[in-house]
Length: 179
Picture 1 (cartoon, rainbow, N blue to C red):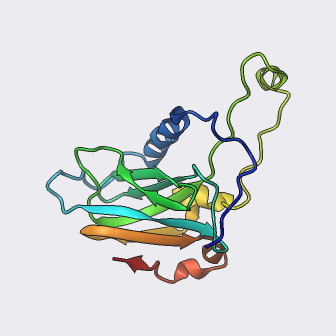
Picture 2: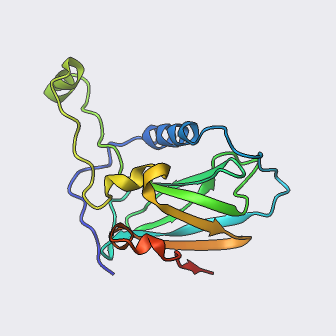
């Protein structure tokens, strides 16, 4: 397996960015689900990997699954080996089985430390938004444009996505589920 070298120091990032992203993802998903999931609904667990041309994507990238039918969301982050394990946004309903839309986003670059020239530029509006990671095409950053949907079944579900293949049109083929 190939390893992806991270060029930026990501150790300054706080868990707040991940929590903020999850909150935004839940808000973006909306409340229009047909019914709320219940803790008694059959449950699944979700894990897998995200690659681009067979190479692990940028560590700390976010993966979010959303089931409109059950109004359920699960999210997690990609580790340095390209693997992820999702946790439910609402622990009381867990991850109910159903059809989920999937989005993948590169991590946001850390903010410039207070008092630095970069911070002053940011606060005065003199900076442009940093470029996103090249290994996660922007189309995968929303449920509406990612084109990825999967069926989560009872028990363990493993989904391995190669974003380059999905970008080239392989998304019309069913996503392989490894049990």
